[in-house]
Length: 144
Image (cartoon, rainbow, N blue to C red; front, side):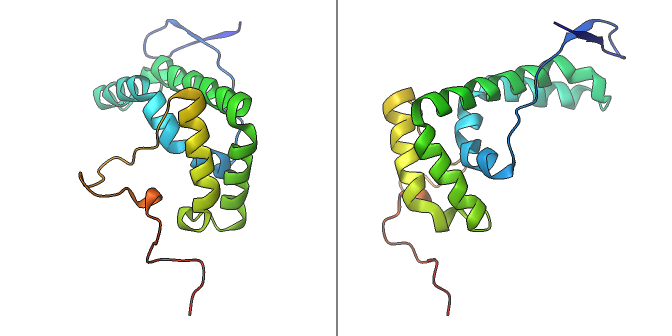
């Protein structure tokens, strides 16, 4: 495994592969990545608050990347068809979630059934139905 030296710490930082996804699959998986990799994301943000030096948080950033790759691999293995359907819809529909609720619901259901993960939108008002679960939304694909 190749290693690079961090400029600020002079300690080896293990190499990590890139996630290797375009914006649509990343957007489709975003809420799941946020929940699944929460610990690593929080460590990375805390580290970034310590120093503006980009090299300061390479190790933490690589942990976030590895976690995201791990989740994407599990999504493809367990819910590949649903994941593809959702991100392909986002790709076709200008990355608008509200235009892709049907494939999103099947992906969310699969993710819960196979991996025990639920889509939770941070900052959603408690006691209200989350926007992605509303069955009769105000905003629809047809515009006047």
